[in-house]
Length: 331
Image 1 (cartoon, rainbow, N blue to C red):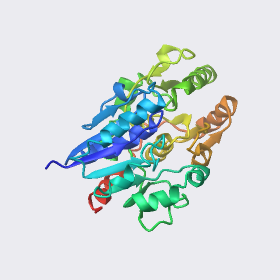
Image 2: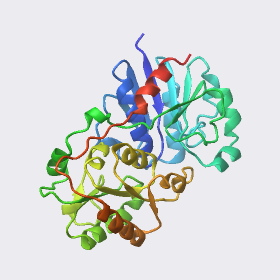
Image 3: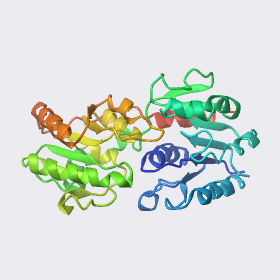
Image 4: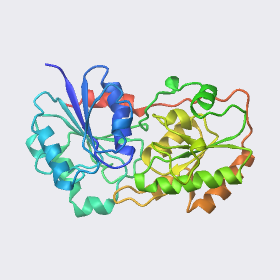
């Protein structure tokens, strides 16, 4: 029988889907991989060899839950079940499903999450009873479930290994459309669709304040606040981040760890989230409170950057490879 993994990756924005694809693209070389997502960006990007079940992001709560339940009712070929971030599902729809699936190894991907949510929903006991393995993808050892005996750690998961990154010069000229050897500032609008306007304003003000630099905004759609000449649409974003001198963006999982891996300073805005603690993660870069603070921080960083003829080549470990091995060994 063909082996098949199912990855549950519901959640707005890019984060959950990108993390799922980081793992799925590697696992898909040896088996079928299905991903359930409701990211509004899923139809616009390559699925990296995975089969993606897209639930439209405008589907109602009950409709989304029923769609998920229907998929789980037909898991006759699945031999690994991987749940990203939310042990009971984003809407609690897995609470009565997972206890019936002890015949399938169940793996929880434990990204940092608000401890209050864990306490209110009684998630600690649920995780102990319903998961065979908990993987922490590079988020440290101070997370709520890190003391459980079934926890294993990896480096952060990334959409590209270091040897897969395209040449920086090619990315700058062909994707970012920068032909001159100037300092490059990239605004990464990878958050929720409602935040695109803020990133558009940020890109415009950076463009006005630093006329000697090349400013670009990486976003699925061009914000109306930003000139279209600054807009770039490209996935995976890590390829563009690696070609920038400074990145500005939210403090979500992918933006923070991609910038850290490719060695590019991140000026991060910590957006409020119901479950994620962006402010805690933002401390890994240059945390700023608003656009004014961001521009001041960029001004300081630009003074520290010297354009080089031969840009350094990033070297890092992609934890998604290690995670695939850990999941394969789970019984």
